[in-house]
Length: 511
Image 1 (tube, rainbow, N blue to C red):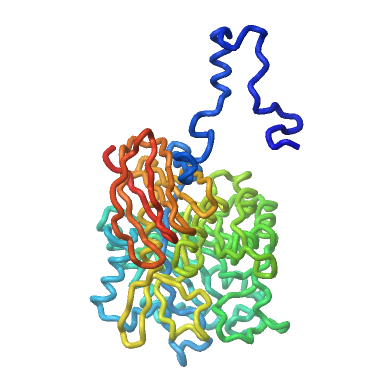
Image 2: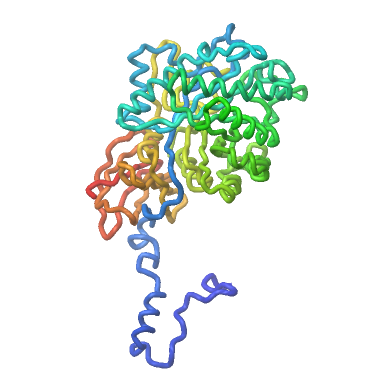
């Protein structure tokens, strides 16, 4: 079958007109014929087939944008904090001046300017039913990072939205009565709800932090991580507990009610964080929530990790919006955040994964996995070793390429903006666009090239800007968030030679 002719549809040939010669068609017919003819730009690839044709339309808003975020991880694996007081983020090794430099690089006006922050809630804050809570011992650096980050953010006239994630419950709350036991003891379901509420109240009232959401679990769908007896035989696993869909639904309702009873109705509940969006939907979590009207009504935010694996098998995980779509069909107001995703090779390929989370999974915010890592403190080596910063055991630290790659995104997509429509006729080129959406932030778009050097012709619509200032990071580190020039729009488009394996951000200027 000819690719130009499709069953049940008109061909792309001009319509058959009356017998009058073509040069003497009536004016209305001639206008109609011209309207059906393809525009010159659509006739082929850009610049006479020498450039990739791409488009950004800031007026076509796809979803609200809450921002990009950061995650400082402190206590994540140790089974006995007294014997092994793990501090994975590494701030405990640094001088005050170095801590402040990193805070500036993350939250400052010339830094990442993140708008979201994730804080884990480890299992060591209570040891027995009805016992006292200790929210300070195992969270000293985590709370320091959050407090100082909030100061820096607000000094710039911005604000943070914080989510806290239950990393795992105290041992006594599990059937196994050990740290990282697999199953919740039903007798302690309310103890667990109150455990979450106590931490939320502490963060808001004692620490003065703008906590917005409580997330129920960390990769609690992954039932493979325990032995048949419900115990762990791998010391390099971080904290979690098995959370079947029914338990998630139950706790959305229970924790929402307990937060309200504690005077914290402004803190929402999320369904926890499966490993990826494929599991959130295909493993039954989205359906369980959608089928329970009360849980759906009390849900504050949709969350999942956004790790990507495109190979079919046990670890398959695609950027899939189906679960989000099911819940938004009943509650269009719901936002969705990625609360952990890999830094990968800290390269352009990794930034392409962000494109998938935003444009395929259709999320409203992204927080990557631990941005500050102290490698010696992860048992056996972190399976996601990329990061923004590395802290060494001698108290020195370095900025990684991941920081500069992430900076391309974080500065472009500020809280309150909107994700805008983009396209590119080359699968090695991807664009992410963020419209100002009434904020003081400039319209911006990010161009990713995971292939060799290519010329790209970007048609830009929906903005009053006449030119864009570009900043670039390359895999070969010749550019690490370096200014790449100013590009004026000519006939509504800019032409850019994108280096191989590069990420370039264009900010609107000269409106």
